[in-house]
Amino acid sequence: MGLMDFIKKQFIDILEWTESGDGVLAWRYPMADNEIQYGGSLTVRESQMAVFVNEGQVADVFGPGMHKLTTQTLPVLTYLKNWDKLFESPFKSDVYFFSTRQQVDQRWGTAQPVTIRDKDFGAVRLRAFGNYAYRVADPKKFHTEISGTRDRYTVEDLDGQLRGLMLQHISDAVAASGIAFLDLAANQIEFAKQLLAATAPSFEAIGLKLESVTLQSVSLPEELQKILDQKIGMGMVGKDMGAFMQYQTAQAIPKLAEGVGQGGGIAGDAMGLGAGVALGQVLAQQLSQGLQAQPAAAAAAAAARAAMGADEVMATIEKLAELKAKGILTEDEFATKKAELLKKL
Figure (cartoon, one colour):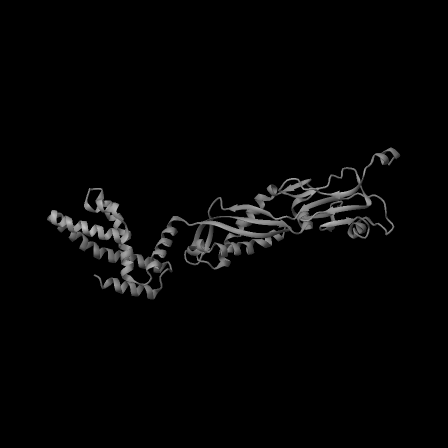
């Protein structure tokens, strides 16, 4: 190197990174053809780490603080460059800074339903959405596996990869939680905890730490939502068969009234006055009034109602059998309810 080239060359005394804006995970110091002054200082701020790389090989890693750059503080680089203890010349090395702050409010979600195994229903299709937060924990591994020699590597660059890791472990999280699919929506905290545990090792493998996972919503397929509604209804009435029959009747009355109401009958008029058991009482009262004014129509309605009682009992038994087959009712519970219903015939 000529004298003029030596004079023109700049020697860097201070290495530091003042983060500008959010979302930068890794940043390479713009070294160009410059060299680092022996004995210069490296400033690493809180929530940062710095890595020296020699010809593509990761050397020394520094945490927060001010570090004087000598053979003592750069032992790996000293070894790689074969420096002796008297070495005091400027030197070249690539220097990368990494942000170790938490990257919060990262979104994950199933663009398409994910098929999972469930102990009650076998294979079901799940849609779920939530947030997660992570940080760079091992800059050496992150540099080797992900960011490489790029001048900047951002949260946005990594977003698709991390979303994929989250979705990949949803089935593992459901299995590990031991939560039945129908109860999943009511146990979001436990599901999120298991999703974090299942996914964390994949983050760790690329130098990241998965700090937290939240589950905002779980979408049930329509057919399973109906079963969940039935289970909730039965849970509300417990083993009180009379209350269960009222519940079933309240469910059936709106459909009956809708069909009759299309013809302008008294049941259709009752639909605007209430629902459930209250609706049944209103309907019975108006039927009684109708019997006085329209004997023929009332007699036909009474006969239809009597016939419907037997049909309703049989339909209820069939529904209970379906719930038993799906594991919602035990064999003893089904047998007890069936016996009580048959006594009503």
